[in-house]
Image 1 (tube, rainbow, N blue to C red):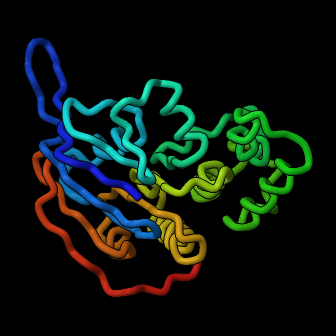
Image 2 (cartoon, rainbow, N blue to C red):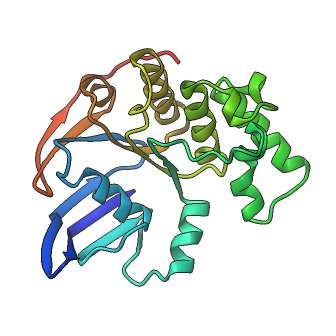
Length: 232
């Protein structure tokens, strides 16, 4: 589902060349839950940003769902994020003036969908993440855990094949963080969505099928975990 071949990213800052990712080769199969861990600055978020098309690699190739992104223009990446990729950030990025259900509906409206189909899809996603009772509330009325659940509903409302989660528990306490990781695990188990998780949390990483440890922009070790059963 996600394949990287010798992908590197070099940043140019004040005449200096700063390596962000160094010749990374990776293959994440469909329906897998893969976590990335390592110290700050090791390239974890850079990796996710490249897969999401939020940044461009300096060299190498990224293939998503069997399609090379080498020739992607900005419109191609926008289409990929609207159809194939869902992104969950550490910061929730909910629109303050909209209700939860309006926030979740937003990606569908951007695709030109409307009416009963949108309302039904939004209701389905809010029920899935346990937020149906908060549909008419605004983000400022929610706890951090509730805001992240709403953000996940928005990220999956278009049924993406790939979910990229960049430190989704970073702003949450341990209990709410565990609930979010359990929810991601459920998406893998029940819907065969492919999840790539960047985290500093060892407990979160252990919920994944396997973990890649990163250092200095490289993948240095792969750890396979025993199957886990987590309830949301």
